[in-house]
Length: 92
Image (tube, rainbow, N blue to C red; front, side, top):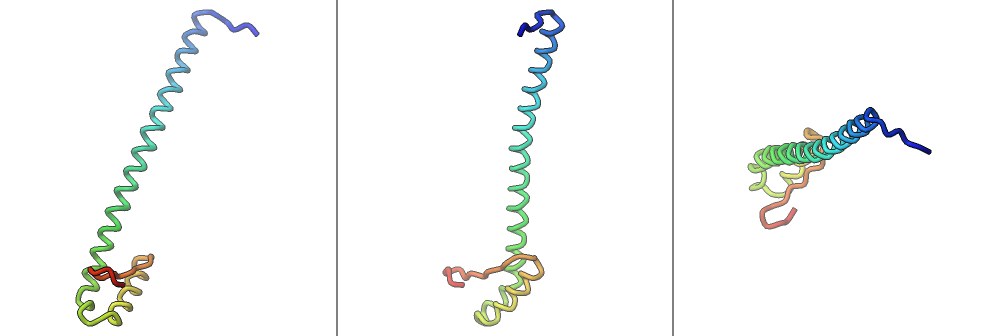
């Protein structure tokens, strides 16, 4: 198979190659940016939910474990996730 060697084909090939390289570089950059954006967003959301649950359960911690469990269930229902309260010494 013989390929054309004219100047038009050389420009077309160079243009296509530069477009493909640009698209690949943009795809790589956007995938890294998207990953970083969503990771940062999730980290921020989890931190604010943790502060919310901590402030909500702090008064009940002095009353004992039995007072905290209903609050954890309620917080889990409100936030749409599982909530586990762990004391500073590592005991649930």
